Image (cartoon, rainbow, N blue to C red; front, side, top):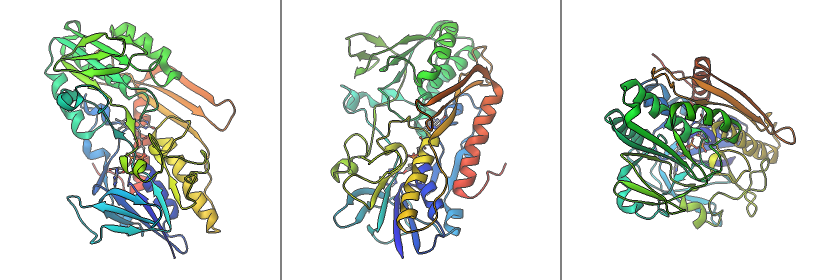
Length: 390
Ligand SMILES: Cc1cc2nc3c(=O)[nH]c(=O)nc-3n(C[C@H](O)[C@H](O)[C@H](O)COP(=O)(O)OP(=O)(O)OC[C@H]3O[C@@H](n4cnc5c(N)ncnc54)[C@H](O)[C@@H]3O)c2cc1C
């Protein structure tokens, strides 16, 4: 019997677990730090009351029934030489040991949001909120709904970061709320972007047209290097005051990856289709943590996870699952008429052709917001084994 240990019970981790569950002579254990999973893609719609948490949360119990062992613990160390993982306790405990050994390890804990390189962040972190975290999005919601005049700063760090369009989605949803309240003329929104265009580049032209109509100011090629009590400073020395700050911190892999010699900012891999670590045949990465030449999003996370699972199946002489790199995405454009009814654009990239083939529909539609919801729910249903009940 081969023990496959997966770190992280998110999109990538649960994809690997489902691909390997009930396979002959394979036992899958997922160690994850919380007894439930919050999906990310529709989280920005919490701001406009178009999404409820209850629809995006899933527990692991039905996966347990499928034969996937899920252990609640926070991984703090990987020891490749001893083939074991060390974890600390979390609020829910269903496992008595702190060490788990493995024959194959799949590292899929997603990303860490790290503001520590920004001067003043340690002191003024509380000024910042983002849509990226279930708790912090609520703070942002409270701040924007209470804002009647002043300035909002939205920030995207250098790519790659998790979910390319989310900073733009944030700016447009915040604008929608201000317009809904009738105070849009008294609040200036500035989107500062460390990249030369809003991300993903494939829809940057659509975004800049909508920003122009909404009067959202876009500043590109500028990293935020300092945060103070009510201001940020960019690399060029420009100072921007704010009343509300929605800054996505630079993303990286959790520290245990670097400490185990598995990579620095991201986890090292042999290539997009062979996600083994260059030094270790038994260690894989999957999802946002992998150092891939692709955007960090849910579909890519799912695909990396299938490639990782396939390599394990191949090594164990078991049949593989079909998979290729391509994704389709929907970006919320808010509703610049001020209705709390978000319209979205659709875009995609097919990496199975060279050069990769982009596609997009630049006409924002309500239908695309609905498609994104259906897509998110389909992933959750499939990976966690049950549907949301109204
Ligand atoms: C606001 C937001 C909007 C997004 N929008 C889109 C979108 O529109 N389209 C799209 O395709 N993608 C979108 N994404 C991105 C998508 O959610 C991620 O790319 C995807 O979830 C990555 O999967 P993952 O398995 O790598 O990480 P995750 O799904 O985050 O899973 C990681 C899991 O590991 C656990 N974990 C972390 N550290 C540890 C540890 N040390 N020990 C144990 N467990 C640990 C976490 O709690 C989590 O359950 C969005 C994400 C967010 C947050």
